[in-house]
Amino acid sequence: MNMSPNIAPPEPTTHPYHRIAVIGAGSWGTALASVAATAGRQVAMFARDNETVSEINERHRNMRYLGDIGLPPSIRATQDMEDAVGACDAVIIVVPSRAVRSVAARLALFIPEGIPVAVCTKGIEPVTGLLMTQVAEEELDETPLGTISGPTFARETALGHPTAACVAFPFTYADRLTPHQSVAARFAHSMSTASFQTYISDDLVGVEIGGAVKNVIAIACGMMTGAGFAENTRAALITRGMDEMKALAEALGGRRETVTGLSGAGDLTLTCSSTTSRNMSLGMQLGQGTPRKKCFEGRPIVVEGEANATSIMDLARRVGVSMPICETVNAVLGGRAELQEAFKNLWTRPIEAEPRAMDLSLPNPVAATPV
Ligand SMILES: NC(=O)C1=CN([C@@H]2O[C@H](COP(=O)(O)OP(=O)(O)OC[C@H]3O[C@@H](n4cnc5c(N)ncnc54)[C@H](O)[C@@H]3O)[C@@H](O)[C@H]2O)C=CC1
Ligand SMILES: O=C(CO)COP(=O)(O)O
View 1 (tube, protein in one colour):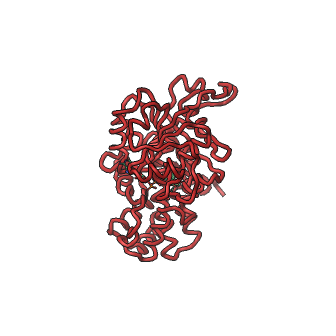
View 2 (spheres, helix red, strand yellow; view 1 turned 90 degrees about the vertical axis):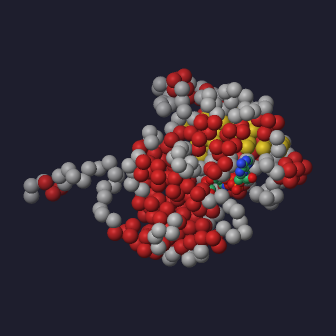
View 3 (cartoon, protein in one colour; view 1 turned 135 degrees about the vertical axis):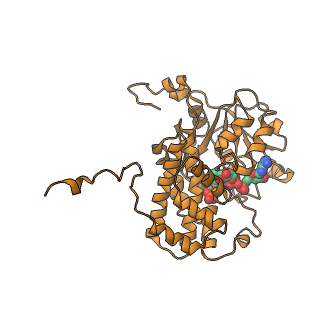
């Protein structure tokens, strides 16, 4: 994507999507609805249960998720998906990865033609190995599909702490000439507030891989912290984890530099540094020796890294990308490796090049220089 002012002078985006439907009333759905309403949009939220609908409409709160945060009173909730999307200009899907296919299939029954959909779920579908937008595409053909992704804890976003995210949709030829009129730019404009800064990208694969893989790396960081390893180890996992993300994104047709942005490096930094992250905190408990079943007791929470570690490794194998950190997490989660031992083994791997693209078989220019 070339947005150099020398080639295409930036034009102001004049057409944000005004009526936004948010499908999924969990923590991130509630935070995104709040952002859109704060940005001046007319927001309809689809929630599965009547209680949540009443709370949002009458008390302007979602007591189950972010219950202590007041929501903009203009947000309207409904249990009727047709009512939510029937007259909208854009849709945001924000449900757990396991529910994206069924939600997209249901949405297909009601969504007006050509309405763009941002799938804000982070994951890779088991068996098919599809990205979340690819899953949605199978159910919603002819719909422009993209995502909004970045370092965005729902609670901090809903509280209005300064937050940045990348809005990614594939670019058409016309978008390359006038990127500020693209679906990505219009969506970004729709979601921009004084505390929610948006950026745009046409590299959907790069952005989605960043969001999906960082969850597994965050589990790794949690595991090693819980097991008593120290800061050097965490920094190594974050950096080498990013290398795994870049390699997978590139193998799938994405760009390595996208992974150095908000949805890759940004989200990796956030979730690997804080126990606010459900992935990091699950990893920590496992690292401290808490049995896996006990970690989920009494809290049916979404931990996408745990749900997606196997599908990410299956996909990596299919495209021939080595991802030793994700492999380690997957083996530990699957009970095929002992945690302490598996992490120590990461430090006794054969020496590799950094970055991966460097060819170690070439003669070392230093050694080859005559004395
Ligand atoms: N919570 C966060 O800080 C962020 C979460 N995300 C991603 O957003 C996705 C959703 O996560 P959260 O909102 O945090 O989860 P959550 O557990 O807070 O909420 C999930 C919501 O989805 C609803 N849901 C589940 N199945 C559904 C179905 N079949 N139809 C309609 N609604 C359904 C649930 O009722 C619940 O309201 C995940 O992929 C997560 O990685 C992304 C960025 C930030
Ligand atoms: O994706 C997130 C922040 O960007 C949320 O991370 P967790 O799902 O680990 O809580």
